[in-house]
Image (cartoon, rainbow, N blue to C red; front, side, top):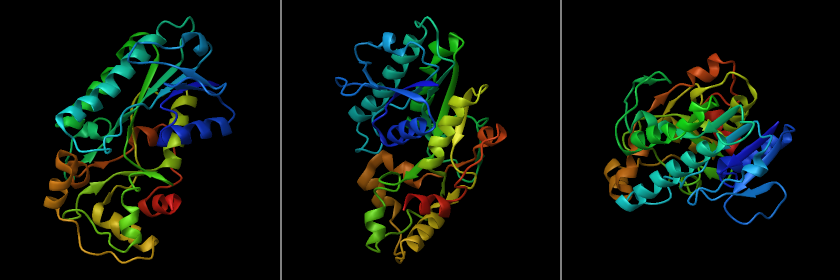
Amino acid sequence: MRVAVAGSSGFIGTALVAGLESAGHDVLRLVRHRPAAPDEAQWDPEQGVVPLARMAGVEAVVHLGGINVGSRRWTRRFKKQLHHSRIRSTTVLASALTGLSTRPRVFVSASAMGFYGPDRGREVLDEESEAGDGFLARLCQDWEHAAAPARAADIAVCHPRFGLVIGPGGGALKPLLPLFRLGLGGHFGNGEQFWSPVSLHDVVRALRFMIEQHGCVGPYNVCCPAPVSNGEFSRVLAHELHRPRLLPVPGIGLQIALGEASSELLGSLRILPTRLTEAGFTFDHEDVREIIRAAL
């Protein structure tokens, strides 16, 4: 199968391209720089430029682009950049696909667990749960809506709502490892908030599932079947690193250091991958210990 991937140089995108190629798929990487390899094609979402000629015969398109929400403090300006980087690129790509003489069968356009809001306590959340409130919830709703042109053209649109992606060299584990390796790690706030992690390995497998399985459409929570408290996550991480788990990081300290973005660490989202498992997908890493071991 010929698959086009936007955001192919990111943490998830790099792993996805490798996974697709290892499975025998022909990958076209949509890049913003001048192409440096035969499998690259330049696009410019700001100018609305998409290389349609290079995309002839593409059966699936995956869009993973967008500025990292955790890359800096959430100032008003940065939140506008987060919104624009996702909505503009998704709208341009989804609209361009409708102009292909033979349209792709499926468009996998990223979303995130922020769809459900910053904090839902102990409520069990699946794809039928209502959207939450707050900046990320509104961002994710706009992000998913931006793919509307593709849906209107009868392209199957899938929205993987990523949980906390954990893998070697990046993702949610990256900022935690230095402290935990020094034996200085602890849980955040009271540690009772639910986290919904997923291994990078299973993220790639889930994206391939949406691409390869005919009939996939709509939102899919991409997180392991066993959400865990932040306290348990930190306990397992410290144990796997053979380090002690020290005092918790006070919630007020995170709020001062990170501002509004602290809600990502202190909020509770207990999310289940209901639609994926009902569709027949199985996770290789089903719980937090397996996820952390795979990353380490």
